[in-house]
Length: 241
Ligand code: BT5
Image (cartoon, rainbow, N blue to C red; front, side):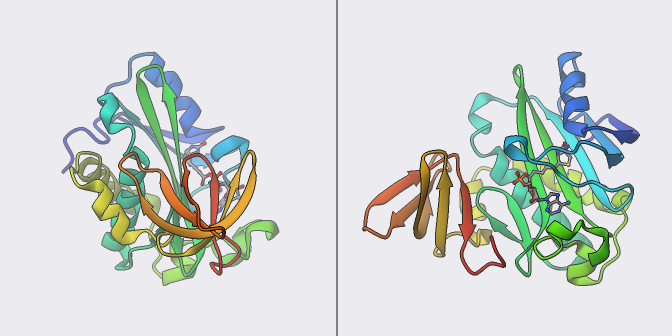
């Protein structure tokens, strides 16, 4: 049983974004571990203004307020990705691969996304996990790249059954000392040919390793090692990613 993750949980029917609600709650003094869950989101957020499709009852749409030492922020997205992977393994026996920094893939399809936002001195960890969608439940544009635990493993896990193992795993992973090693073992990006898309342009290379700050070290096609921090990285050959 977790001691702080999910210490107080707000269950909502429909909100625009659980991250927005959790950030407001953080401003009003929500404790470390306070969580917001919605059955549906009408304006689920991805990174950089992208959308996250969050239909009612078909996935877990969760945000957790974290009040951590600043030193823990750096690896938080890795801890979160591992936590989701652990919870999938606990509920349906298969651990998804992680695409740097924190997309979760099963058979090359994205089944989960993570969005971390800062609110003053708190971090809000937003996690979306596709659980019960069938292929036809995804919008046409996502159908070839998105999946759920149901479509990829056949396991039909309701959100309320996925939540306890996820909260357990969040608590364990957020405090884990050797998190970069654990992450490296499950990260499909490392060793793969990648395409890196940065604000300034894109390039091809091979992902070599992570540095101590969690940045991706990529050997580009001209033989130059480049440090990639804020970018979209596609693993070539992985179903369009
Ligand atoms: C993410 O962004 O993957 C972060 C998603 C975080 C969602 C959670 S749900 C609870 C909390 N509250 C929020 O408002 N957000 C968080 P990004 O890497 O930018 O990926 C977004 C892209 O994934 C979109 O542009 C689509 O291409 C694709 N996408 C959207 N919805 C999807 C879904 N349900 N399953 C798979 N892919 C999806």
